[in-house]
Length: 453
Image (cartoon, rainbow, N blue to C red; front, side):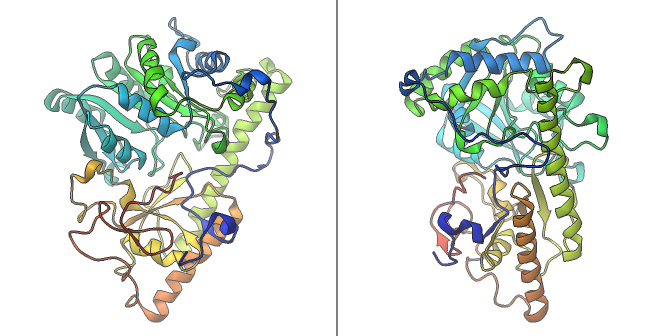
């Protein structure tokens, strides 16, 4: 490849585009799994909705964590196990009828692909404003439901790429829309990556499950899994939670879309979801078993470790002349505004291309301007001047990537930008639906997937 990137030599690169957390040991956390049993029965196909015991474990975890005071409880019939978040989204999209579907800009890139592939979901964009910290205006959303006939709301929470989170009363009001005829689909993969300011708030997470009244009547769909929170992206064990009738439909769509999740890994995941080991809520240490206390330390270890990495990156960026307008309070992403840089380096695609020459990767902001079926021209996209930096990788990789950014900016000071930005055409006709630089720095006729964006 032109810039030498390959998975075989990826250790030589600083991948700040990485959409997954580091998977190795972190301070004060339990050891990582190194092996799993493979009983003979697990060599058979698993049900397309997943192993019943794992479905029960997921339901029980959510009941204990978020629904202790609710009469309505999740059961295994409210849970479908899927081989990854994209599979979960695809299964859900396949069973929804012809409806107007609200999505936000910027948001997770997979929504572009899902809304493009499943034509019965008619996409309706809402541009979030940096002036309000990319907050979803719930009152405006209610008006849009009435005036535009929105039937589905799709969003990530916590938000990828902006690192913000919907919580408290805002989340409660959003979930309430599911009792008023609108289906709400929330991608909650970063629900543990919350960075509190107060010590006593460590160990808490966020989920719409806390505000669902009736698990079979509220039209609320949650997608999550082991990928981010358990730091096991390679396992591809995720789940969809929702009303029973939805789960029945997902069994049918899964039979032709993906065939189901890995059977042995489903069995291996069951003990990881034991509420006695996953103390997500802050409770008295007196009530803990030794193992539960140990597991709560794992939750706190994750939050403190990733918050420290966030703070490290945020402390280095100003020294490079890059200010973060809206620091993330969740996820492991920084939505970095490049507008103050000289042209054309202030364009996310050019910034991305220049960093490739220094063996570093970021994700151009334009990728998060969701544009299903390329209906809109993105020439004036509000995301052009942004890149997404991930602080998911180990801190050594973060420093390597930040050093590469410094090298690019030093080069600009010495020689200017006259030799930059020639790898793509500055044309109103060239947007993400035609040509964008791929990871080798050349032009590609299709949008690179960056499989784990």
